[in-house]
Every structure is written in C-alpha cells, then in structure tokens.
Amino acid sequence: MASNLDTLVTVFGGSGFLGRNVVRALCKRDYRIRVAVRRPELAGHLQPLGRVGQIHTVQANLRYPASVEAALRDSHVAINLVGVLTEGGAQTFDAVQARGAETVAKAAAAADAGVVHVSAIGADAESPSRYARAKAVGEAAVLAALPSATIMRPSLLFGPEDQFTNRFAALARMSPVLPLIGGDTKMQPVYVGDVANAVAHAVDGKAEQGAAYELGGPEVLTMREMMQIILKITQRDRMLAPLPFGLAKFQSYFLQFAPGPFTLTPDQVAMLRSDNVVSDAAKAAGLTLEGLGITPDSLEAIAPQYLWRFRAAGQFQKKSA
Image (cartoon, rainbow, N blue to C red; front, side, top):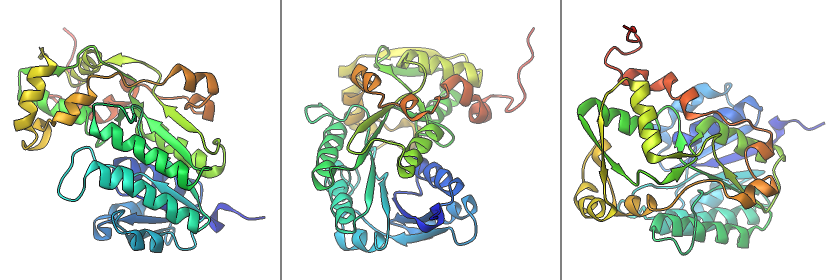
C-alpha cells in the first residue's frame, strides 16, 4: 500500500510565515516536500522541520513559467502560498497573485498534479482594494485552468512572526498613542497553525475539490477589540486614537515608504473599510475549518505564547496589587 512518502508535494512560497507552518504540517504527515522559492539560500530554516532528505529546496519565480514548470516536475500536488501585502518593483499584486497563480495552476494541470491555492477572505473582483481584486482574478484563473483545485481563503492570520499582532505590540512599546483605523471593521483572526492544518487536510484528500473554503477563528472581533487584546497581553496602557479613513488614506501616501511597523499603504486603508469574516454561505456548506474537522484556536489563547516579549518585564508577569 502506498504511503505519503510516495507523494511529492511542491510548496510555492514555503519559506514565509504561512509557508513554514504548512511545511511543518506536511512533514508530520510524512510527505516528501519540494519548497519552491525565489531565494533558496534563505530557506535553510526549514530543514529542521523534517527528517533528513524530506525537504528539498529549489529556485522558482512565479513570473517565470519555465521555473514553475521545473519545480513541478514529478510532483503530485502543488500548493501555492505566494502573495505580497505590499508591492515592490516587479512584485506587483497582479504579477504575483493573479498571473502568478494562473502560471502555477496551468503548470500543475500539465503535470497532472492537484492544486491547493491559498487566497484570502475578501477576494472580490469589485473590491476597492487592488490586493483583493488580484486575489479574485487569481482564484478565477486557477479554477479555469484546473476546476478540481481547492481554494483556501483565510481571514487575518496571527501567530509568531505575523505582521499584525507583532506590529502593533512593537508600536505600543514605542508610542503612548496608537492610531486606530477602521475601529469598527470586523475580522475573524485565524491561527496560522490551523490554516496550515487545513491546507494539509486538502493534500490528504479530506477537502472538497473545486470548492472555496473560508477559514476564520472562533471569534469575530472589531479592530478596536483586537488592539485591546494586544494591549492586555503586552500589559501596555495606551490610548487608541481613531483615525478617519480620509485622513488615514492621506497619511498612507507618505507612510507607505516608512520602515517597519510604521508602514501603511493606501491599499491597506482600502482593505480596512470592509469586514473580513467567514460568510454564512460557507458556514451552511461546511466549507470552514470546522467543516474540515479542525477546532480553531482563539487570539487570546495563542497570542500570549509569543507576545510576552513585548511586555516591560518580558516573561515575568506583573504581580497584582
């Protein structure tokens, strides 16, 4: 009887935040893994996640179809995790999340490989956000090239090394006032480990082919509530200053060039205008984490495990009076 060791899974974008968690989940299931990234020399941190020889790294760039085809040679499944939150040079939303997604799907179809494509809740061809529009175009292109592909749409991801909780925890350490954009916008923050397991479930054949799963955590929270949770965990007493969308958009034209946690782009402001939660349709169809048999972890349960380093006393809790 064939085992998972006979199955080669190529993971595009496997060295990133979600990628390393997906690779870990696949390693636990004994798959052979080929990680396709633009800079293989920077992906050495993945090797300890698996056994000797289980993970192999190759060079590939979604903007160059020949490199994608080479990365998929002899593969049984392709997982596409590649995405960009901010554009830079040739790495545009359209090039990576629309045309790049199509390139992977067409190459997988030619190689007779299955596809698990990670998109995002909020992917919408009519969205004011170029990021969300590119995600929607990418989804459509993937299903057109390979109708049996499985789409995964996570909400806001959190976990160690994320770009949300860590960013605001770092800001709270430096500033007594935190800007609050879209304070009433609803999110359904989802733990990166749960999304990684959902992707691995799809590789296992436990997900419905041709379907789009919407992956959210156990709670729907506003931006204000999430910021308050971060401040509570990091034990920082900070004022949240609501920032109107118009002013935030104006400031983003300058802050898009700012370093680290101060970066804010006009497209990110546009995304904050819309709620980012699992739809009723997905719930009714069972196209959720729960539908895959995964019980999602909450932000308050997981974030203290890694945000403690932003406390004034580090891992040492302040004693109650």
